[in-house]
Image 1 (tube, rainbow, N blue to C red):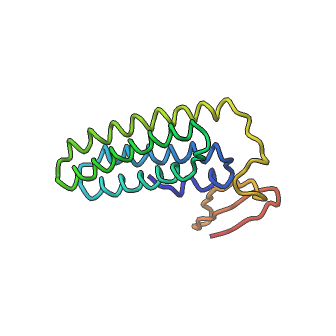
Image 2: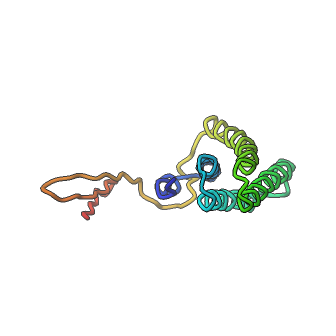
Length: 161
């Protein structure tokens, strides 16, 4: 999984889209860990998933009841991931994957809910997380034995690599 693929989405994202992207990243890392059979690679993917889960936890506003409910779910999912890491360290890969699969299922259902909220919500251009950004279109061309990268936006700037 390459988090660089998310760069343009993150720049143009509103807060709701950032939550959806975070769930996608967690899901990607957990699926990578579930597909992995080498302990070091599994531990890395679990670590990255836990980092993104930590971002979701830190973004909660505890004044709302729903945030408290989400916090308890996040704590449980994190507990499953920690238990999975312990199993990986003990070279009990099968047991580790069982714990991870449960965490992945829980977080996938939550992510599905956030995607549904996103699809039923109007996205306003003024709600972007990063203000005053340009709309970005990127591509690569191959001409004359050279690879050229271009960025096309309202000002039609062009960058060549």
